[in-house]
Image (cartoon, rainbow, N blue to C red):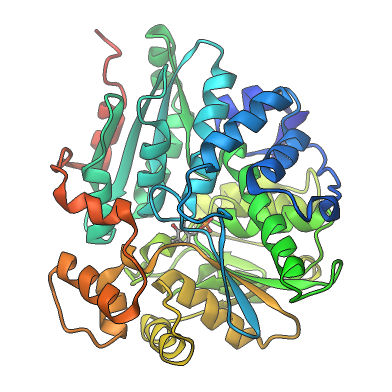
Length: 478
Ligand SMILES: *Cc1c(COP(=O)(O)O)cnc(C)c1O
């Protein structure tokens, strides 16, 4: 299948090259030339890995089907819940739990798959993965790429900008090919610098001389986006299996959104024929997307807030570029808008195009999210993490016309401080917080999170943004 850059239709690559590269050479993002229709109803009884192989085969026909089936089985076979996705019915909505993978965040769905695709696409070339993370991507990427042949990985997270649990998860990562740095700056600083490194001719050439190509494990990589389509189809079919909806009936989705990858995967699923009504884009106080969706003006000139849902503390959402490509059509001046964003921090699009796409936006403050955690726990006995609580709050603000799938992106135990406070647990020590939440809720602590307290901290370096360029060139002059 052909992929082309959002910024220039003549920049073409096949799936292997698109996955291997991450961003396109012109800085745009690869998009598929068509979104294949998918006969989702035929997969009502398919186990998750089988469905995943069928969806991936539509986008990545260059890989053989047996290989895809083998990889999806390996990627999803040992998730901690039998159906891979967990479900909890709360009446007007069903929570789809995407956090039963090895790092307890939904990023595992993409990042248990991407390294296998990357390694098969590299065809013997060495690849160095650079990743800026607001918390969960880093750990999930480290876990996915750990000791994968011909790869190494550099992860950069904002110092003080991730939860202590997220920090501990990254700092204890095992593996010979992994590097983790805290960066003095926020997520956008780290993400921008990674993008600059990708675009830096000198660094790229020196890498080439050393036999190393750079690539990305951020959701700008098409190999990360496609595996995320699968859980929307699977969750939809689960609602049919449970008798919550009839086959063909529409549902809305509520998605806690940062870089816009997760919700974009839902939009792709809809274009592939899955009956989705509205896309509820839920943000925290960094509400740039809410304003964009309501006014058509994307304006990143605003204060950056650290919130209790740190994986959504983002002002420049990368995948909006792919969304613009869907709603504005092929060559509709995406490059101009991205340039305007770089230079003036803002651009605008016709509001009608956004309305037609059925995207709606809401945002929630920390106190509102915390109140939702408490309310849902007290009423339904169900425990949400702060990101999921933002989505739940967005669903409530939208007012449900249809059944809603609320996408739960992290285990509540990844953010024990906020969850403990919401439940009225007065405790500062993180490990004790976990234990007290478990005692109160009866929800078991995910084994990989319990384990981090006993592992040694391997990575404790904090660097300046400027130093990122230096560290990624490690080994170039050996
Ligand atoms: C990454 C992440 C998000 C945001 O997802 P995007 O695809 O970047 O929009 C939301 N919640 C959690 C817990 C995350 O890790």
